[in-house]
Length: 110
Length: 113
Image (cartoon, rainbow over all chains, first blue to last red; front, side, top):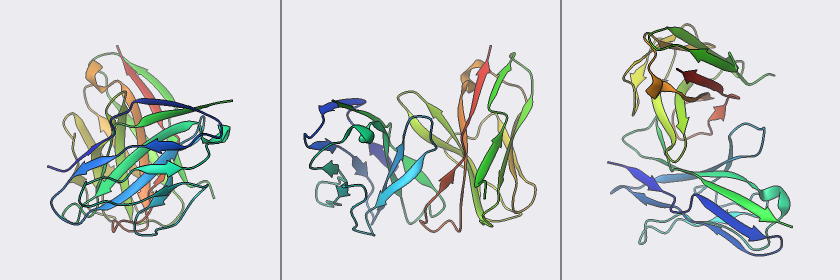
């Protein structure tokens, strides 16, 4: 079965420090990976997807098929990055479905 | 555009009561989804509708039914609520189901006592 694991429920870093949110997946085929974010009092929204290979709000994520990981990184955290982050997997078989990880609550301390 | 709207925002039910959660989107999307969000478990798909007239089970469909009333609306019904259904429910939509961005509603916080 497909699964997404985010090992850290909570992550706290200081403003200006690098941040890395971990995501590991289990799937034998070619996955599509996404990061969704939910800021306080806002809706869940797409942050980035691996096929776009773009940087959004300074965040990047690289799909590592060998390690089955899709970690989210930002070199210098900002206070407005505090939010709940979800990694999600779309499989070819489950074309309509996203499988979400448990989520990581990121807090940026001033 | 309002995007994806959900009603109600909050609801408290007694065990055994029934209710319907409403969801509508004004983006002319084909696919719609219902998720539940529980602490430590992320979002889990309950049901989805790839297109108007079709529905299919997701990861946790037991205890729920859905209706894709038309292209805009996708409702979720709890026939006999149980405390285990206490959760935050999110509706989402996407243009198609093919890996495109899903747009989420604001959520409904449901408590079953």
